[in-house]
Image (cartoon, rainbow, N blue to C red; front, side, top):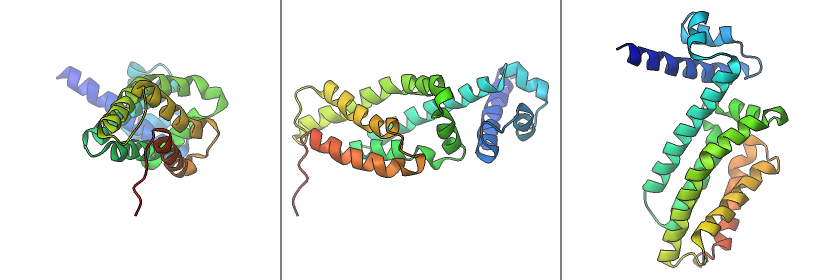
Length: 196
Protein backbone atom coordinates (compact mmCIF):
# COMPACT_ATOMS: atom_id res chain seq x y z
CA UNK A 1 0.00 0.00 0.00
CA UNK A 2 2.77 2.47 0.92
CA UNK A 3 4.59 1.68 -2.35
CA UNK A 4 1.43 2.34 -4.35
CA UNK A 5 0.93 5.70 -2.65
CA UNK A 6 4.59 6.58 -3.28
CA UNK A 7 4.28 5.68 -6.97
CA UNK A 8 1.02 7.62 -7.24
CA UNK A 9 2.53 10.69 -5.58
CA UNK A 10 5.55 10.51 -7.90
CA UNK A 11 3.22 10.32 -10.92
CA UNK A 12 1.18 13.24 -9.53
CA UNK A 13 4.34 15.35 -9.25
CA UNK A 14 5.35 14.51 -12.84
CA UNK A 15 1.86 15.40 -14.13
CA UNK A 16 1.82 18.61 -12.12
CA UNK A 17 5.26 19.55 -13.45
CA UNK A 18 4.17 18.98 -17.05
CA UNK A 19 1.03 21.07 -16.57
CA UNK A 20 2.96 23.83 -14.84
CA UNK A 21 5.68 23.82 -17.49
CA UNK A 22 2.97 24.18 -20.14
CA UNK A 23 1.38 27.09 -18.31
CA UNK A 24 4.41 29.01 -17.03
CA UNK A 25 7.34 27.63 -19.05
CA UNK A 26 10.13 25.50 -17.64
CA UNK A 27 12.37 28.45 -16.79
CA UNK A 28 9.61 30.35 -15.02
CA UNK A 29 8.33 27.41 -13.00
CA UNK A 30 9.34 27.21 -9.37
CA UNK A 31 9.27 24.12 -7.19
CA UNK A 32 6.55 25.86 -5.19
CA UNK A 33 4.42 26.07 -8.37
CA UNK A 34 4.77 22.32 -8.94
CA UNK A 35 3.88 21.32 -5.38
CA UNK A 36 0.92 23.66 -5.40
CA UNK A 37 -0.35 22.09 -8.63
CA UNK A 38 0.23 18.59 -7.20
CA UNK A 39 -1.46 19.46 -3.90
CA UNK A 40 1.46 18.36 -1.74
CA UNK A 41 3.77 20.04 0.75
CA UNK A 42 7.07 21.40 -0.51
CA UNK A 43 8.94 18.92 1.71
CA UNK A 44 7.20 16.09 -0.12
CA UNK A 45 8.75 17.24 -3.38
CA UNK A 46 12.22 16.79 -1.88
CA UNK A 47 11.45 13.20 -0.92
CA UNK A 48 11.37 12.46 -4.64
CA UNK A 49 13.62 15.07 -6.26
CA UNK A 50 16.70 17.01 -5.13
CA UNK A 51 16.16 19.94 -7.51
CA UNK A 52 13.87 21.29 -10.20
CA UNK A 53 16.36 19.96 -12.75
CA UNK A 54 15.72 16.46 -11.42
CA UNK A 55 12.00 16.72 -12.09
CA UNK A 56 12.69 18.12 -15.57
CA UNK A 57 14.77 14.98 -16.23
CA UNK A 58 11.96 12.83 -14.83
CA UNK A 59 9.47 14.55 -17.15
CA UNK A 60 11.78 13.89 -20.11
CA UNK A 61 12.07 10.23 -19.08
CA UNK A 62 8.28 10.05 -18.84
CA UNK A 63 7.95 11.53 -22.33
CA UNK A 64 10.47 8.98 -23.67
CA UNK A 65 8.55 6.09 -22.07
CA UNK A 66 5.24 7.26 -23.53
CA UNK A 67 6.76 8.00 -26.91
CA UNK A 68 8.35 4.55 -27.12
CA UNK A 69 5.03 2.92 -26.26
CA UNK A 70 3.20 5.08 -28.83
CA UNK A 71 5.77 4.32 -31.53
CA UNK A 72 5.50 0.59 -30.83
CA UNK A 73 1.69 0.83 -31.10
CA UNK A 74 1.92 2.80 -34.34
CA UNK A 75 4.05 0.08 -35.92
CA UNK A 76 1.98 -2.76 -34.40
CA UNK A 77 -1.19 -1.40 -36.05
CA UNK A 78 -0.07 -3.20 -39.17
CA UNK A 79 -0.48 -2.16 -42.74
CA UNK A 80 2.12 -1.86 -45.46
CA UNK A 81 5.67 -0.77 -44.79
CA UNK A 82 4.89 2.59 -46.40
CA UNK A 83 1.90 3.11 -44.10
CA UNK A 84 3.92 2.12 -41.05
CA UNK A 85 6.79 4.46 -41.97
CA UNK A 86 4.35 7.32 -42.46
CA UNK A 87 2.73 6.58 -39.07
CA UNK A 88 6.14 6.68 -37.39
CA UNK A 89 6.88 10.05 -39.00
CA UNK A 90 3.44 11.37 -38.06
CA UNK A 91 4.00 10.23 -34.48
CA UNK A 92 7.37 12.00 -34.31
CA UNK A 93 5.88 15.11 -35.91
CA UNK A 94 3.04 15.11 -33.39
CA UNK A 95 5.30 15.26 -30.35
CA UNK A 96 4.07 18.72 -29.53
CA UNK A 97 0.38 17.82 -29.51
CA UNK A 98 0.33 17.03 -25.78
CA UNK A 99 0.01 19.83 -23.20
CA UNK A 100 3.41 20.73 -21.81
CA UNK A 101 5.35 18.89 -24.46
CA UNK A 102 5.99 21.91 -26.71
CA UNK A 103 7.53 23.79 -23.80
CA UNK A 104 9.69 20.80 -22.88
CA UNK A 105 10.81 20.33 -26.51
CA UNK A 106 11.68 24.03 -26.83
CA UNK A 107 13.50 23.90 -23.48
CA UNK A 108 15.53 20.87 -24.53
CA UNK A 109 16.62 22.60 -27.73
CA UNK A 110 18.25 25.51 -25.94
CA UNK A 111 22.04 25.39 -26.36
CA UNK A 112 22.60 25.19 -22.60
CA UNK A 113 20.34 22.12 -22.38
CA UNK A 114 22.17 20.03 -24.97
CA UNK A 115 22.94 17.29 -22.38
CA UNK A 116 19.22 16.97 -21.66
CA UNK A 117 18.45 16.68 -25.37
CA UNK A 118 21.22 14.13 -25.82
CA UNK A 119 19.75 12.09 -22.94
CA UNK A 120 16.39 11.94 -24.72
CA UNK A 121 17.97 10.98 -28.05
CA UNK A 122 20.19 8.32 -26.43
CA UNK A 123 17.18 6.78 -24.70
CA UNK A 124 14.99 6.83 -27.79
CA UNK A 125 17.45 6.00 -30.59
CA UNK A 126 17.81 2.22 -30.03
CA UNK A 127 14.03 1.70 -30.12
CA UNK A 128 13.66 3.92 -33.19
CA UNK A 129 16.38 2.00 -35.06
CA UNK A 130 14.74 -1.31 -34.14
CA UNK A 131 11.30 -0.15 -35.29
CA UNK A 132 12.57 1.46 -38.49
CA UNK A 133 14.66 -1.58 -39.38
CA UNK A 134 11.55 -3.74 -39.00
CA UNK A 135 9.61 -1.42 -41.31
CA UNK A 136 12.41 -1.47 -43.91
CA UNK A 137 12.66 -5.27 -43.75
CA UNK A 138 8.91 -5.49 -44.28
CA UNK A 139 9.17 -3.15 -47.28
CA UNK A 140 11.95 -5.26 -48.80
CA UNK A 141 9.86 -8.42 -48.27
CA UNK A 142 6.84 -6.70 -49.87
CA UNK A 143 8.97 -5.60 -52.82
CA UNK A 144 8.18 -1.91 -52.19
CA UNK A 145 11.67 -1.04 -50.88
CA UNK A 146 14.90 -1.91 -52.65
CA UNK A 147 17.86 -1.68 -50.27
CA UNK A 148 20.65 -4.21 -49.68
CA UNK A 149 21.05 -3.53 -45.95
CA UNK A 150 17.85 -2.78 -43.98
CA UNK A 151 19.74 -1.76 -40.83
CA UNK A 152 21.91 0.77 -42.67
CA UNK A 153 18.80 2.03 -44.44
CA UNK A 154 17.08 2.48 -41.07
CA UNK A 155 20.03 4.54 -39.82
CA UNK A 156 19.95 6.62 -43.00
CA UNK A 157 16.20 7.32 -42.75
CA UNK A 158 16.39 8.23 -39.06
CA UNK A 159 19.39 10.51 -39.66
CA UNK A 160 17.39 12.29 -42.36
CA UNK A 161 14.44 12.72 -40.03
CA UNK A 162 16.72 14.04 -37.30
CA UNK A 163 18.18 16.46 -39.83
CA UNK A 164 14.90 18.39 -39.70
CA UNK A 165 15.57 18.99 -36.02
CA UNK A 166 19.30 19.67 -36.31
CA UNK A 167 18.71 22.28 -38.99
CA UNK A 168 16.79 24.39 -36.49
CA UNK A 169 13.29 23.73 -37.81
CA UNK A 170 10.87 25.51 -35.46
CA UNK A 171 8.74 23.12 -33.40
CA UNK A 172 5.55 24.39 -35.05
CA UNK A 173 6.93 23.46 -38.48
CA UNK A 174 8.18 20.00 -37.43
CA UNK A 175 5.17 17.99 -38.70
CA UNK A 176 5.43 19.46 -42.19
CA UNK A 177 9.23 19.09 -42.25
CA UNK A 178 9.01 15.46 -41.15
CA UNK A 179 6.36 14.81 -43.78
CA UNK A 180 8.67 16.15 -46.48
CA UNK A 181 11.58 14.14 -45.07
CA UNK A 182 9.39 11.00 -45.11
CA UNK A 183 8.70 11.49 -48.82
CA UNK A 184 12.44 11.73 -49.49
CA UNK A 185 13.10 8.71 -47.25
CA UNK A 186 10.63 6.63 -49.25
CA UNK A 187 12.40 7.59 -52.48
CA UNK A 188 15.78 6.71 -50.96
CA UNK A 189 14.36 3.31 -49.97
CA UNK A 190 13.45 2.70 -53.62
CA UNK A 191 9.72 3.17 -53.23
CA UNK A 192 7.94 4.01 -56.44
CA UNK A 193 4.63 5.74 -55.81
CA UNK A 194 1.88 4.06 -57.84
CA UNK A 195 0.85 6.05 -60.90
CA UNK A 196 -2.83 7.03 -61.09
